[in-house]
Length: 135
Ligand code: MN
Image (cartoon, rainbow, N blue to C red; front, top):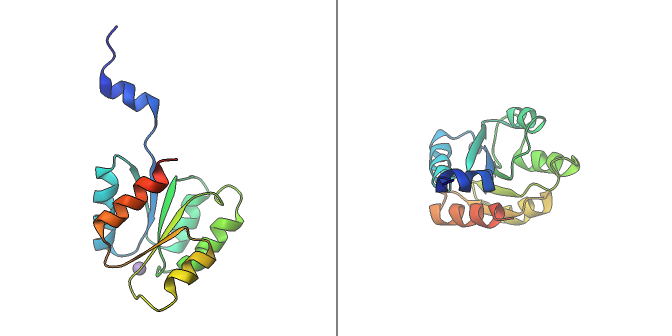
């Protein structure tokens, strides 16, 4: 019996799921294109409360966290994600537009794994998705 290659590939591994927490439609569109091109699945929350509600029922493989979001700061949300045992292990990549001295350190000490300043560099987003999506 001949199994179509695509079907075989799909049954071998399910696509990685990326939760994008982002309130800027332009950044969201950019990220959604990169995620789609990587054959990953996109979950979206446009504020901190929506993100918390989503994380109560879904466990994504990677989180792209805009630090400046309505409802709760991305840093506080990162701390909450790290305190919850079902989400503590999820890699979090922080992004921020108003880059301040010490942003990177603040993000990392809150529990983020990596940090990307905006405007987002497509190649860097793709590289980090591949890095954290490969495990
Ligand atoms: Mn924002």
